[in-house]
Image: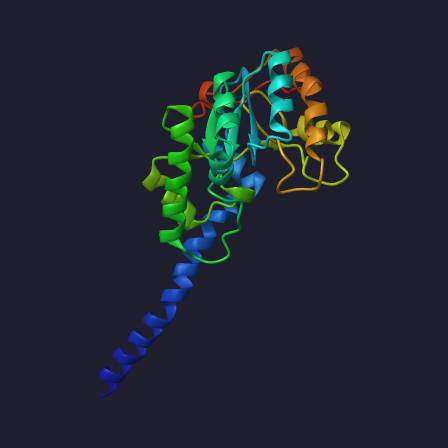
Length: 255
């Protein structure tokens, strides 16, 4: 009798543990959002690449109100970048998405919408990410390579969805906090440059759709000085596709 009771208790405990384990599998990978552990332990996920190169990336577009200004600025600077786009925005602005590619930039996947993954929904995540990847492939004519989850929160569901979709997750090594209402060109540079070395990946935004109104202007105004700082340090600025993410190293710092 005691043996049967013990087995019953163990079974009950095992059943009770299932939701806890599922929650842990969902949440634990999201710890990669923390920049210190990410850079130290997962340099590839952080976007660490060639020692002589800086990857310039933009999130949340395309946005017809602001993205064309970034395209014009990048043309002026003779710089190409990677745009992490939202599937719903690509579907709504196909011509602008085509224009990004036509000007030599790389399209990558930022999800279908810019939502937070509060609870495990593996089927939904896989379906929406595949839909976003398909939208990007349609307008670019090439299968996308990179995936950056909204808010940089790489949950277990999102990681599994990326693998099933054939996308490679990549976050960043430096960001500009350009989404804030009080962001200025000076504040963006002051935030980016201390963390920016060769091999780094910079996160900026070409839209304010998920942020304070008109904050994109701070990132736009910071671009020339950011690119100049990189070039002064002997670093080339370009898209992730030219970054050699699998080969990270210690490098010169942009100032």
